[in-house]
Structures are given as C-alpha cells and as structure tokens.
Image (cartoon, rainbow, N blue to C red; front, side, top):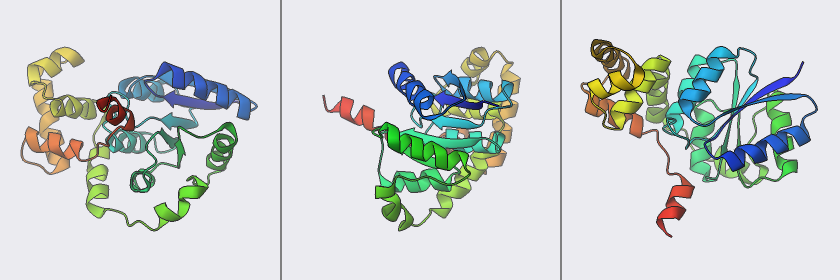
Amino acid sequence: MATRVLIADDHPLFRTALVQALSACMDDVDILEARDLPETTALLETHEAIDLVLLDLHMPGSHGLAGLAAIRCNHPAVAVVVVSANEDPRVIRRVIDHGAAGFIPKSSGLNEMTAALDAVLDCREWVPPHLERAVADLDSNDEDLLLAERIAGLTPQQFRVLSLVADGWLNKQIADELGIQERTVKAHMSEILHKLEVRNRTQAGVALRRLELVDPASRLAGND
C-alpha cells in the first residue's frame, strides 16, 4: 500500500520541491497538497488513510504552534513533521513538545530529508543531527504546553472562529465568512472562552497569538 503524504505549505514552488523530493526518496507514495490550514483540515477529515503531514507553521490560518496542536488533537494517528526555514533550537523544542514527530529545515538536502522521512515513518523522532544537542539542552515551557492543550481541545470550527477573532473580525463577519448564523458564532465563542479559561474574546485572541512564531521569510522581507 502506498504511503499517503499531505504537503501543507502555501508556497507552490516549495510544494513542488517537496513532491520531487518525496518521489525521489520513497518508492510508493501518494501525495496530497494543501495551501492553508482550513484546506489541510478538510483533507484530513475526508482522507482517513493519510500517514504523514509535512506542515509549514507559517501558512495562512495556522497561527504557528496552534495549528500543529489542533491537528495533533483532531488526528492523533497522523504523524506530523514540521518543515520550516526557522532553525532556532527554541522553536524546534516547542515544535517537538507540541507533538510533532520531527523537524526538517527547508534548507535540507535530499539525503537529509530521506533520513528524516525514514526515521519518522519508522516511528522515530527526527531532529537535524547538528541541532540535537542544542534542542535537548532546552527546557519545556509548561505554560506554553498547557495553553496548546487547551487550544487543541477546540473543535475545527471553534478553531476557525478563534482564528478570525484573533484577526479582529466581528461576529457578523465571521458568520458570513463561515456560512453560519451569528448566534452560532456566539455559541462557539462561549465554548472557546470556557475551554481556554479566559474571560473575553480579547483574551482569547491573545492566547492564540502566544503560540504564533516569527516567520523568517517575513523578517527578511521587512529588511528589503
């Protein structure tokens, strides 16, 4: 049976590069592609046989570690490997703590990517060898993990509502965007506040933002 891999990244050229790498390093692979978190979630919900997700933390809708936490909660049987240009050991520590099976830098060559995929598909954790020591020496952030656990307890629709709230959308705008009634949005917000143990939508948005990460690509663009 073919290994089914979902590439979740908003950059078409990088998705193409990953498709080529997967085809080169795996004998029998079925590849799906998604460009944002809602599309990723939809594919995970409609394709039960997905074995592995290669996840970009900075694609639209992901909100950094929050998207990873949500996927791990709703699809615990699917291995998730983060593929990122951010090679900060502190980021990798957080990625592993939040349930990723591995971390592959976007700068990796074909040999390293092959080794990483072989390890993960063999149920072994993968961190780039040159960063293993630095990552292992870092302590986990208990508050960070508790927040991720609470966000992971949201349903996919509640996560979508929270994401839009964090972006400053009003209830009516959210209802129109998701094709639901405004009272349904309010009901979701009540559940979100309860699950996150916060008092209002502002605090809920702040909680989600705490799990976001700086995208190295955006940082470089800002320096142009």
